[in-house]
Image 1 (cartoon, rainbow, N blue to C red):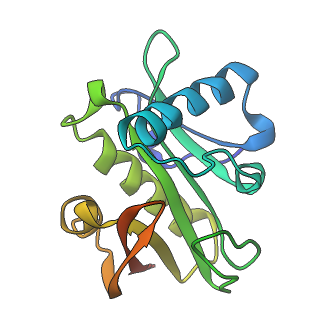
Image 2 (spheres, rainbow, N blue to C red):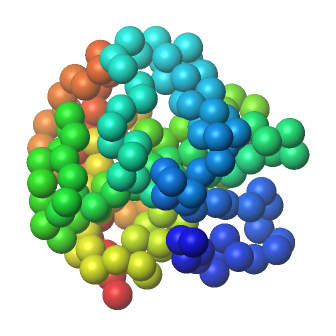
Length: 173
């Protein structure tokens, strides 16, 4: 089982944050994750690029669920020293966070900030990563990611039809 951070273990922290490898996910959890990602990216943002990919197989999946089992917030994270994708090259010493999705019903509750903070803490506490590199949608550059400590590098670019920026966070230990 994947170790959880202190915040994820706290009973008062609602909803509970789950962190699992692909093989640890139940079929119902995987289905709920894909439904949420589809609602946020395909339906909500009109992204037509393939949403499910082979990178899911090597990721740690961080998510929250409501009482009905619906995934209300989600992100995936993985070691860039071992794996690359359409946005990242193999980069020793770095991890990435991506596919950050919060359902409309959970927006404005701080859940997005909470799962990003949880991912940063988990990577810092459970890996040897020196930094986290992300490809962030530009509209979240200053609000979500900038407030979490990420710094923009370079100029905006288009990915999946949406403006993105490359951002980094150096991990303090």
